[in-house]
Image (spheres, rainbow, N blue to C red):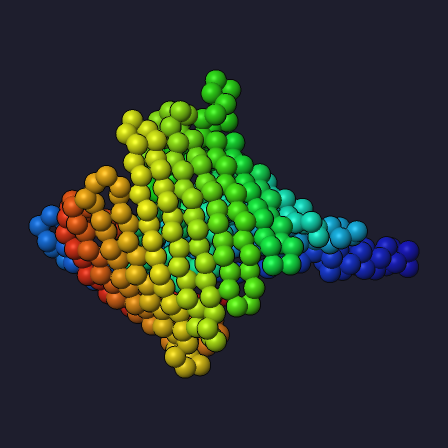
Length: 359
């Protein structure tokens, strides 16, 4: 009897702990087939199954919270990105490349430690109606859908309509795999304590009818870092100004990302975008966007236009199609599709059809 009572008490305690802690598993699998023109200087076309994204990047994640009492919660997120075409890990081969952090949350905001979305990510998310679609502003600036920071301390708090946030990274990117999500700037260097540091900050005002968001992002270079940022004296800065308005169920979003890269050569550019998202019927969604990237003091211009239609088969499953065009002038060579290739100075047309399932 005594043993049975102990087992019963342990079961009750375990049940109480399970109720206090909430953990969920979630994910998206989104795959499609695309046809892109002018993928090389010879003007050839390619039909392929993209890896980086279709309408959104594929991922699987775990998130949870534990009530600690007195208005405090322990929180965490672990999120893996992968390519559904081959099943390989994304974000430079990281196991939890999209998010890997633990934190504390209260009425005064949330404090997070680990790899996390930084404030550039949040400043654009509400205004950019296309998000990380295969044809989108992600093609014009591949950092935008990958605006995450390793080794970061982050804070975000929402107080009525006002949201403020910041991140500070001691080493913004440890992966050396290459590409926009892995730029090899590990930091945390005793010999150079400014190498690969990154600061981002956000302020936004959101109501049911509209929202305005602004962010500042400055990242230092370091030895061996990609994109020419091979010294901690070099910096890549972005100032983002974004907004959206609701007209009934229709969202109109626009923004400007002003960038200044200071390395051996200083480069300045502006990225503008304007988009609209509207439900055509209970199961149909139409999104459209135009964007331009202009590199100052050069003739390089890239203008992108995209239309996407989605049909909801259920709350979790949709089929979608995107049609895009990019116009490169002045020797610009930016590909229409995220992670794609293009012949220098050539325009591109593309179409993608896919299916998306969330769980």
